[in-house]
Image 1 (cartoon, rainbow, N blue to C red):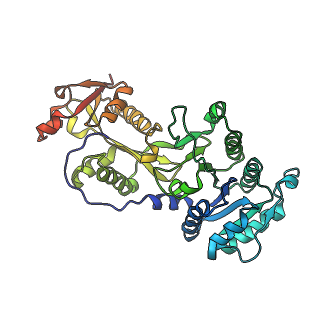
Image 2: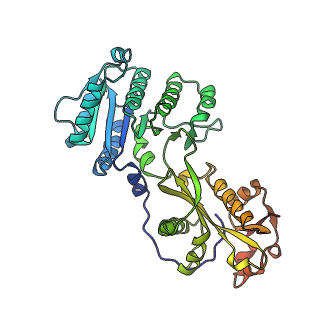
Image 3: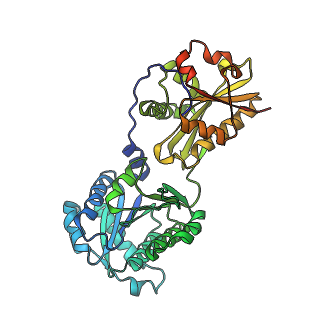
Length: 384
């Protein structure tokens, strides 16, 4: 997003699926196919593919389907299918008692998970709302790491018709006011209830898109979380390798210009990262000051966020933290350069003003390609 000098750098391995498999390792996920989903192979096969990946990853998976879809699900699972008869729950009777599911049922689910890491069960209903409520109650009782609601309509969309990659709990009520279909309203309420009960997060996606939703940065549906998904913090030397990998990913995508290993090392000491929880890095940004000490200026550089987090305020949080650091260093101003129209609009929204090349330190342009410089939009924000 922000400017960098065009030089070569070594390629570092960085895969999207690995990112999420690390997050899911040793955790429990509950999937449910919302009727009529589950009645045809194209609903089930992407889920089975996902379950195979998670099983190899030592992730515990619980799958809830309608009683009508249960035989089809078991048949498509192949060797992952349970050895005995799959359990069937009756939501109509059970939801009247507390705790629900009862302790004996929870113990049985745990024994099955311990034996095979994938459990499939049926609910004695084909009503979409009843199955949704049952899955939420079960997820809440088990306090699973993630609840995945698989509905053929997929993720949520904004009033403009754009897919919402993320939705925080506090925004669900607003979505409810605009959602017309009863089942979609039920799904939103179930997601909110699950998170209030301690479920880590909820994904709403289509059955066909479940693999992409869980294992790619782009996603295919909507991830619902109780609070903001991550936070910005300075990186430590133990983060340098991971940050380098993310910056090189941005370079390979064309979002950042390549840097030499030396130039890459120079920006790491003052780099900030956006962390998802306490684990994965989803965005980076650096404040480069060493070449501009005489002017007491700082360059905002190597600003990059993973695809799924674009448009979710991550870049703005990173720049906000960079500006806080710049003020703490008593810099007079900060600046950024970009050749991308989207990035130019981003800096303008953050109250940066567009300036001429002479309004930033001359050291920036030492040895710089003149034709490249002519294509740049240069933004500056005064700090004193």
